[in-house]
Structure formats: structure tokens, C-alpha cells
Length: 368
Length: 219
Image (cartoon, rainbow over all chains, first blue to last red; front, side):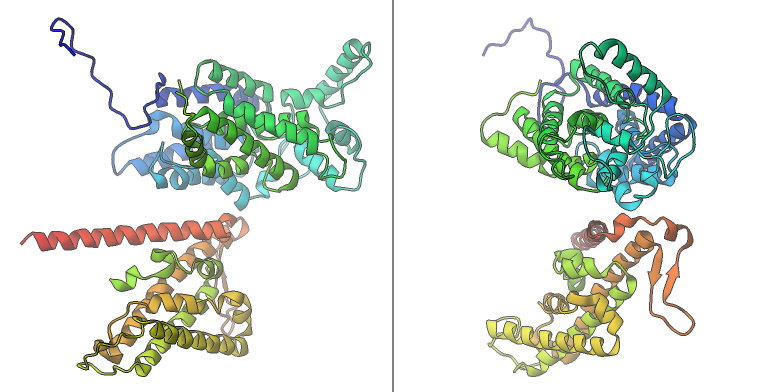
């Protein structure tokens, strides 16, 4: 090799720890972009539930930031600007009911930051997704406050208000009619949807679907747009999908993991979902399950966390399928929330193994 | 030093099953600790009395109880015998504690075997053997009761002791007892507490080690 005396000095080489993957986005930028992607869904939740939702979000984000600050104070290496504590606190808050007693989001955020993230060495060294770990901790510790919801049409936190998913579970466990789609079961169980839903579904049925000979069940509109009782930021699947589309198009997350996660869940739910409640094969109502609960938020915003998911594409696909299987089992047969947070936490344990498995088979792709 | 290094659950990660199971409530942890201390001291005493090298100054080439297989067998028999005695006494005298220790009472033998391994040599006499066993037992008890205290106070908002006179045996901690951090009462919560305790023990050990080496190198 010959020296070229006329060449300019090379730019300083950035030094950073392995793996040296060609990603043009900095961690800080990625984290804030994920927060931005969640913004529409969060805004929708605050719009529907009002001040109680803002209170929960403020407490969860504030506690996460304070915890991060407290841990980094002795070493004076402040990490608040990387946005990771903000995002963790934000996701914790978005999965909670509006109006939940404020110690629940505070404890969940503090647990996520102090125990799951900082005890293992901070961002990049935690093996479990902090927000999901915090949620599982809260679900195990305070199941009662986390199953009380607000109706989106105003009104206080009530025991009687159920999310569509919880109402469906209750109806399936009870003695009533179990025929038809999940929404049909909800209607026959007397679950009430909004007046807007009645008019929209009525208009669509009479003007668009009547000539085709089909009709929508009451509640279709409410469940689709997320005008139901549920987690502050997890009820609106379309707005979450909008943010996810932005993140995928900007290269913040890759499509493999969420697509395989949601896909495997849908396939399993469609085929086997009805078996547990005695409704036979092909009666699980996969679309209803996709739109309710935390599946979309978990699949696009928590599971693809680059720290706790496999690096290789093959590993990501396997990870997604594993999460889909776990979520299916935990949602249809388990009792810990809707199964998304618990399955992501369980799946995180297997992420390094999947990477090793994929690497041994000589299929490490570049991640750019 | 050896006492801290041999703590079965907190340092060696042995005997986790009974440690996690009995540290949900403070009184169970206290009973378990009492059993371990008692069995440990008595078994060390018994083994010393039975071993052929009795006094200081008697040099020997035969391995002590911890050396050969025969010694290990002896330790096993004595420890399990004493554990069985403790279990039977508990069943008769304190049936409630016996019921709540349940299957974990026989496991006292495991902790005692681990704890009595590597004690002072036969040349050190009966007194040293018993004090060493006592120290190890108390170290184990301290770790267990500490974990139980954290888990019970946060996990159920109570401290369960022994009913005495007008005192019912349970102290309730007001704001926590209504909505306790139930996750800490589960096995996972116990492992979490244990992990932090082990971390703290290691940090302290590393610090004393560093201080010792610094003291040796600098005049």
C-alpha cells in the first residue's frame, strides 16, 4: 500500500463498542423517534380520558426520569438526554388505565429503571425490556387497580367498566351464549358501545354492506378506532400503526419482528383460539384480538427494542414467532393481563440464544 | 471472612429452595434460622467428639471428617439425624411453625452440610469448632431474616412474629397492608432480594479485599 502525500487527513474514527453494525441512526435519535411514533396514540388517549390520563403519563415519565437521574447522580454521567428513560416511562404510562392510583405507574416506572435497567448496567446492558418488566411487576403486585377502567365517554374509574377483551373473557367464562364472533358475544352479553358507533355501523351496514349481503357487528367502529375502555395509549391500533409505519419507513425498527409476531399470533388465534372456550376450530376472532389489548403497541414499540431483541434477521423472525406463540397461550389460557407484556419479558430471556443460534448457522446479515 | 464466603443462599447460591420458601414471613425465617444454628452447632460438636483426633497438639495423617468419604458420611448421618430431631420437636411443640415450614424443614440438613464444610481443622479444638459453627449459623440467619423482613414488609405490609400475651403476633404497616407490592412475595421477588443481597455481599467483600491488598503493598 502506498502513501498518498496529497490526501487530506482521514476523519477521526469514531470508537464504539461492538457490534459494529452500519446503522446511521444514533441511539439517542432512535429513542426520541420511537417516542414521536407513540405520540399520536398518546394524544388520542389524553383526548379521550382527559386529565386523569395526563396525570398517569406525567407520573410515569416523571418517576422514570427521576430514577434515572438519581442513579446517574453519583457518577455524574447523566443519561437523561438519550430519551430512553422518557420512552420507558411513557410506555409504562400508556399501558395503564387512566385514573389508576398514581403509586402504580410510579412504582412500575421506578422498578423498570432502577431494577431492570440500571441494576444491570444501564441502557444497552439490560436483558429485559424495562417498560414491559415494569408492567409485569405492576400486574403481579396490584392486579385490582389495573383492572379498573374508565369509559372513554367521560365518567369515573369504575369496577363495572371492562375493556372489550376483559368483557369477552368474562362472557366466555360465564354461562351465556357463546356463538358467533367476539363482537356478537359482546353484544349478547350487553356490553355497551358508544352512540357514534351505532350510527357509523348503521350507516355502513345500510349504505355499503347491504348490497353485498353482509353486515358489521355493533362495536366494530369503536374497537377499530379505539373508542373503548383500555390502556391510555394502547387502545387505538390505527394510530399506533401510523407511528409504526413512520418508524419502519425511517429505518428505526425493521419489519421482521413485528410482522412475524403479529402474524404468528393471528394464525394461532384464528385456528386454535376458539378451542379453549369450547367453540371449536377456527373461531378465535383474531381481528378482534389484534385490535384490543396491547398487541400492536407491544409488537411495534416494545418487542423490537434493539437491546433486548436478537440482532440478526433470522433471529428476529424466530423471536417474533416465539412471542406470537407465547402471547397466544398467555392471552387465551393465562391470567396476567392480556399476555403481551409477560410474553415479551419471557421472550427477552431467549433473545441471546436466538442470536447465537442464527450466527452458528452462518446467516448473520448486516443490520443496515 | 470464611463465614461470609460460605453463606449458602447469599454467596454460594445453594439451598435456594428453602431460603426462598421460608423468607415470605419473618417468623418462618426465624424458625428456619433457629433450626440451622442449633443443628449446625450440635453437629459440629458431635463430629468433633466422634473424630479420633481430639485435642490440640495431636498431629495426625488421617484425614478429618471433611476430608475422606467416611468423614462426609459421618457428617451426613449426624446432620440428618439432628435435623430429624429438630423437625420432630417442632412438630410436637410448635405445630403451626412445623406446618408452615413443611417440606423445607428437612432441607435444614442441606444448609448445615454446606455451612459446616471447611471449618477449622481438628487441631483447633472443640471450642473453636463450636464458635465457628455458631458464627456461620448466625450469618445464615442474618441473611435469611433480612430477606424475609424486606419481602414481608413490602410484599404483604406486615411483620409476623410470635404471639405473646396480648400481642397477636402480626404487626401491620398501615399504608402498605392495603395495597402491598405482591410481586415481592412471589418466588421471583425472593430471588430479586437475594440477588441484591448477594451483590451487596460481593461489593463489601471486594472492598475489604482491596483494602487488605492496599495495606499489604503500601508500607
